[in-house]
Image 1 (cartoon, rainbow, N blue to C red):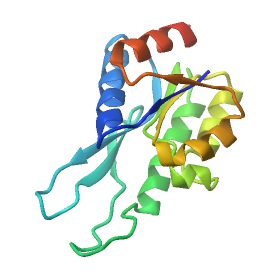
Image 2: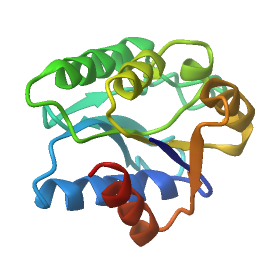
Image 3: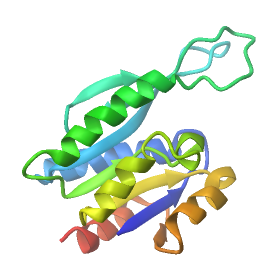
Image 4: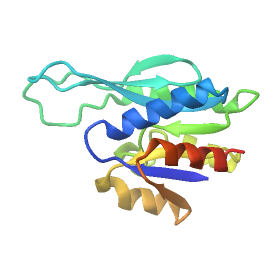
Length: 168
């Protein structure tokens, strides 16, 4: 009940997960979670990162502007936690979601923060979870998943098939 794709190429997994969320929403699925939307700001500036919180249909900025010369992580932890709180509320709503989509299992989740507790609650409640993981974070994700996660190709139709098989 825990599926993941390997995020290869900038924004590739974000686009597939966002397309999947739109498709499942159009099929009438109650969803929880968040998909990432990147807005380009030009060659000299990194993109803005927002999370589209699915059940609330709200956008939350999760990047902070550190200046054009900054090299550090641009994640805004307070923005991430705001999105996590909205996703937690959607998990507790009745009727509950049929699927939890998490934009990525990243460094925050490896460290026990971010969406990690929400993923655990969803799985404990029998709600399937779909996420993306980049190769650098794969060992941390695998330690979290304890061999219970299913690797999926970064292919819309294959992921949609997994959703239909898993969240019946």
